[in-house]
Length: 264
Image (cartoon, rainbow, N blue to C red; front, side, top):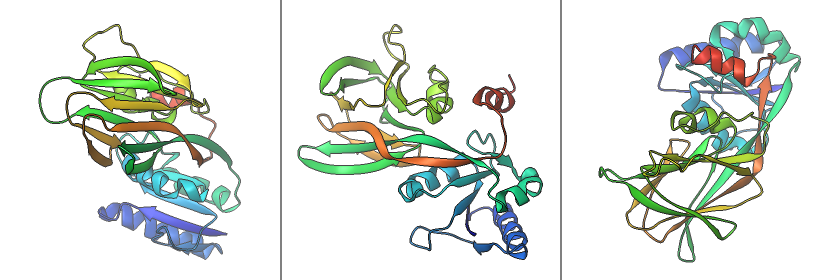
């Protein structure tokens, strides 16, 4: 078995834990790539140490490779993490024996166009968000579904989330919690001028196009990749051809995770 380790290299604690895990796995006959990067040998499993930001970044970089991810929380909330760091020894032998199930998560592909040119392309595990840029006034966005007008939003922004991302920014903006195995996209306005504009859930077979009408806006993917988008540019959001496989060692549901993480 070949295991790649990915960690937030800016945190000493994270590096220390990853090094300890590498030594333990190697003592049990596992081949470990301690600081795995895309372009290295493709492992059987990636173990990701960090918070949700580290996990999201790894998912975007590695989704197309089809490598299962085991996520270890070393951040704060850790919605995407399967294990807390203190639980790792308890499950280590099961990990080595591949005694786990895989849960596939839908991803998004975001493409920004300016005329005939593609100016940006990225995958997202959580969401693509279009937000106002600096100035304290609302933006106007036209939204098309499969080329047909859906609505014009006057709001601080607009979030297009996956079921995985339904517990992230979309939830804080009033969006619904969606079961992670659903094949849908969630469109959630941020502080809409018309309160009647509620979140919209649609099948993931559709393609959404978001067009800023009056102001430059900021496109953000998973809160990490960003681009300034001008009026008339088109931000296309559709289901990605890639899916992320997450290692599951426990039987808890998303509702249990929500109750624990949010202390409901």
